[in-house]
Length: 238
Image (cartoon, rainbow, N blue to C red; front, side, top):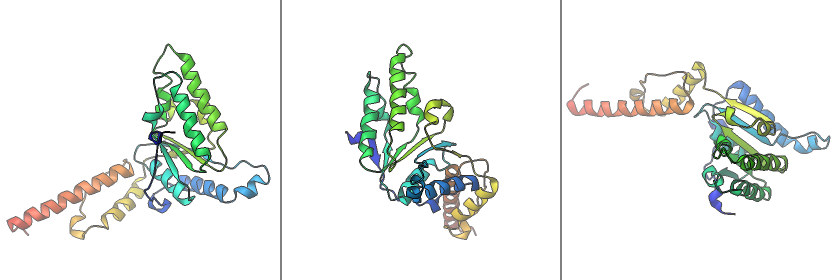
């Protein structure tokens, strides 16, 4: 299979690096507990969650969570390159998907589909060819049903409304990522600013935004503070 269908992640991300809401943290811990004690659960024919769907706001940690879970479980993560998966050629998308899943099946890895809604767009690219739409959906459903228990499947999207309901039902857990509360953001700002000298820490915080947006805000304002201080020093302003 061409490696252009996926990327293997080399970045080390720890779960402790990510700020979760209490509800989200509980669900993630439940998932990790099930994985740790999966043999005991399977002995009673109890299903063990290994298919997660992450949805919600951009920049709230979905991709980082997938990488951190792979790291915690000591598994290689395959980040799917959906631009290489989706094809306008008849039957090619389904073939690419089957090839990708087949490869991961032998590696006991984490298979991560970011922007999973991109697969939804294939269902509409040719309104005159409903057979191709059905072929792709049926392929995804079959591949998810046959997904091995010793591997992890993670899908993520910012637009869950675009995902076929039959596909969503195949995922054991759905985890919603929302913008952090004002209180959580205050702590996040404090932690970020603590890495800079006190004289550069003055910022105008914003709320109702994602962690990624908050980090960009801090970086931009700290840079401006440093540059302003250097300009004033040149002018002899104290």
